[in-house]
Image 1 (cartoon, helix red, strand yellow):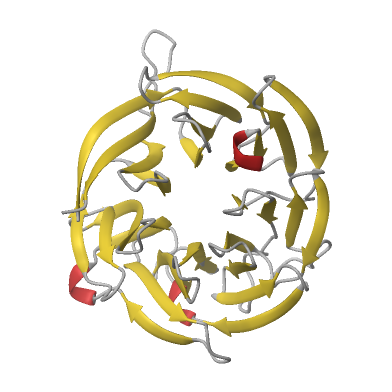
Image 2: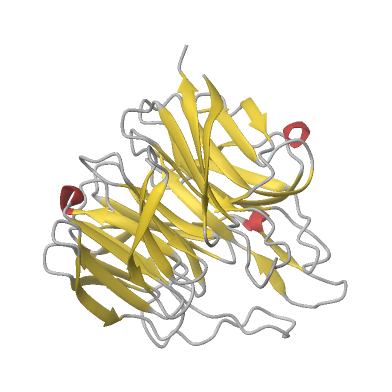
Length: 354
């Protein structure tokens, strides 16, 4: 399996969230400036369907393409009817940011995660959990269905392919999995390899699990982020991902990135190919050969690594697996004649499955 860049689309602001739309070729993109865009990748045109007062951190398609949902650093979730082009609900759901938001594969559930961390102490001091760190909404009613506790801040969340389970992970590498129907936490474990205590320039914890994804058979969970570092301000820890088999009572680490294959930088997103043969992880590179990697699902070995000179924040394969879609940003640069350049990017790669 190989990927080849087919199209690079410029958008006004950095992309933070990305979603395909069921029964449509269009994409949803949420942005640094708070805007939520509906993008036509063929004509490279877009229109704004919503606006948050701060970063729009996540976006998704619900009810088989009938609705779009977005969440942001304003702690607000917005629901948009794509058929009539109208926002139908706006609700404050978090006292703090929505770090990440995901829609279940059956398009019926929406999960958002939040939480704060107090910097400066010589021990981990999360802000008190004034509200549940994980909230799950029923897309049919747009109402809260479940609230789950976790040690804040919770940075990443994801649904299993059968939409029966929800996983979430935090800054300290704590991972939990819930059965959505029963609301019970059925697995809980920790991996220490994504978190650092800085001793140069700034004394505080940094890192965490920035994204996670279930394998197509739902039995494995892959996590990504950045490995240990001494200087939190430099952000130059090693590119890191780990795979866990959670099908048994005690989850076991089965694969992780080979030290010889990684450089330095933050892996912010990952996704599985629909056929399950490979997964993609991507982010920003401080040093090395790639910021986007295609890896074997069976062995974890690097299949292809590329440096697209873009900070990638979200990734998704098309439902048919023929394309890999990446969203992020180039360097913003300086304004010219009082105007900023279009520094957001959506990159579309053709997937050769030979």
